Image 1 (tube, rainbow, N blue to C red):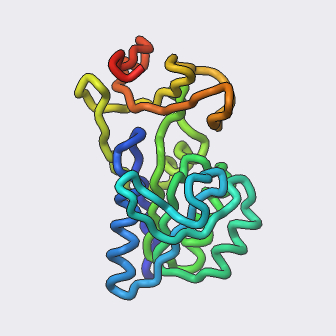
Image 2: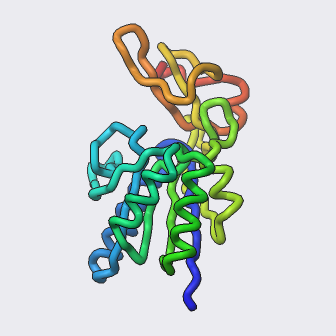
Length: 198
């Protein structure tokens, strides 16, 4: 009996994770392999789509990142042999387990998670931690810091300064300009940004 293989592709901001998901989904669909793309509702950049900075996109079914019952209903209503999940870092441990258990119990060939490994504080996301614990294969997508070294951190920049406290999800409004930038461990620790941009 075929067993599910679980993959996790992680990386910092701007490392091409969503682009890789789009490429993989396209290749499966070109070969008439039934493929389901999921994304958490908390990602509001494009409703019902996974998008990349290159402007490529693929249709996606949105799931509630902390509601295993809703996620199970989505999985049962959209039978697929391959499941791809974007922004998987936002998922709760319970939702990760729900998806993994579903795949094991329904002979899903491959489950591919894509997401950030650490948050703006430098701590593992709950979802990423659980995926790392479950994954058969883990790969790093790479981006670079402004200094040219490999970026491993995702700095939250609010009004031009690195912030390491506050809610996990923070969006722009009239009073706050929020940005995220990939940094190497050194510049993240030293809280140093590219002065030409900030």
